[in-house]
View 1 (cartoon, helix red, strand yellow):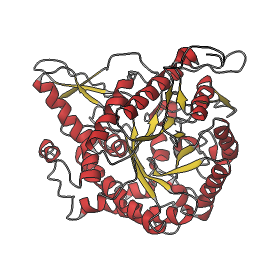
View 2 (cartoon, rainbow, N blue to C red):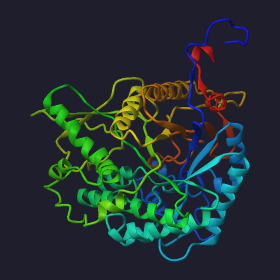
View 3 (cartoon, rainbow, N blue to C red):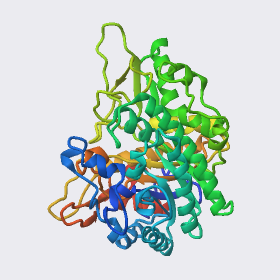
View 4 (tube, rainbow, N blue to C red):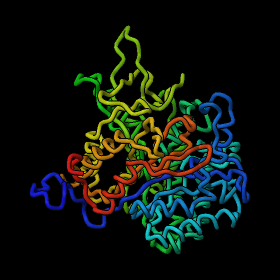
Length: 480
């Protein structure tokens, strides 16, 4: 639509004033410099070197070299008109063994990054943990052990004291479901263990770690910390309206969502989760006072969403489909759910073979908002991988990604219009990077990275997202 076009812009969606427009990354996926300035191996360094665990043996040793190129990367963020950037601190870069004093060179990197962001007018949003547990702590038992949660609280205090004069927005954990159930249940993520009880123990100790870290941050920042946690809440849909399929959805909701929402926001684990997993554990690792520690005041809840989850009961004699979208494994990431089937959601597919379904994000935001109406929400991850190609002219056109993000932003806007208090949106991801077990085979970035030269090229979706961020509005695709 041109400036002189007389048609009314009835399809333009404006977002609330002060809405945060950001992108997100994770330390192991982008930083590289895996053995520099005192950093020691994390569980992902070890996992990526284990034959058969990561596509073609890829590692994050170099990743996209953000550790050395962060100033250029921040300039690209500024060019995109971003108002916020969500990044994670690498625990083994700051506290190599997970114990003892901090390594100042590690903290200095994050001080420089934060200063660069602030100088560019971009608010830093710090995530303390995005899956890179120091290998020494895993050798001592990892997240299934209570001591790891206690170590995390001490680590949070170190980072809070170092960056608290510059940073007010903090996220304790990113997607603890993946850490617990993919890392210790199905084994498709680091550390690659396959023990359902260990996964449940890890989930509890991650919850406890959040509470301890929240307390430590508030102590370090004298109560000024704006606290959050990012959960990959599952939009769970029964395959049919049958009682059996609805029961399957309830059970997956318990171990996929309410295992975190219950203690974090209600101060208790759901009783049906205990009943569903009674054959595995009596949950004796939950001690008196734990849920009070976990339930710390939050300033916002981060929600990560990519695609819905469709489930059913397994009927007698029928083959059990297993397409939960979390990678192939002989072990389920769903403790107590061995008799539940997962199905391909309908719709167009991304390169991850995930269905494109913005209605899932709308349903998730409105449902969480209705359950917790006084808690502001942030979409802390949303995006898609596609088979991006560099054109002969050096540009990267990715209309599928634009369509994906447009549809999901429209869903966010509709949720806000219907009463959900959504305060911001963080596109996953700023740039192509190490995509965990998929190595460098899947590209989620708005910025293309040539993995040989490490040259960065903004894709057409980056330019499109910049226009949305600067204008604080989403026009109909036909009008852009």
